[in-house]
Figure 1: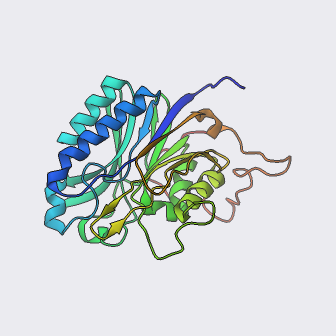
Figure 2: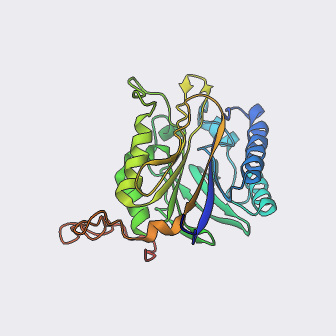
Figure 3: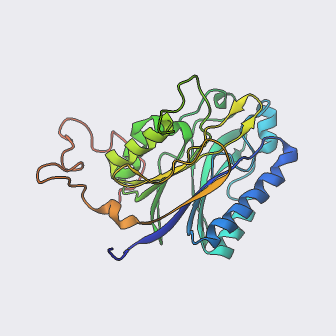
Length: 295
């Protein structure tokens, strides 16, 4: 076995947060317990689900505002930052963010030195459009001591442009925070995979990037959630998972993030990056907001 040149032990946390102000402190404490557990088992990059500090199914916009916090200067962030520093880990987690009169469905990246950055969800699902503003951060990739980290949230995985833009900026791993919800059947195939599983695998495969997807489970009001958390390798196949659609669990994978920077050459004549027809379409799909790190 080759020696890892950029070793990362990634954990995706599948959990069941519940909406309601009476549940918020319990949700936050549960995230801290699961971070403790994941880091105790060796993880140094821990990914939690979308809106894991508040739950998902708000009653109305006023209710959503009541659950929301500032980023990075809110109570939840203070606790996550302290935990990342205590455990010397990186944490990616979903949070309900307030910024003036706007609400955002946000994923945050925190490291041993504190707050690193955030991504605000750009593709809003169903009633999210009643509460949240579409994200305005673009698709940032953050350079860290363990590698280059990009983020997406749930419904974003249905839009191939997101993973492509993140990978073309040099992301080594995409951390995917999710609340994948039950939709009309069929939901699962005979292998137990849902459509979101396959979309995650395909995005990893076609972009030569690791994807760590943490989903939630459980039932909240009329919504039931899919689970199926997984970590996909650069070839698209799951390194671990998908998890079952029921039950809280932490999945681990020890990976070499530097693999995402090697050319995905499968034979002497084909290479995903080299074969792109950038004479016919823009290399970055017209995206101009981010930095592009060399891969």
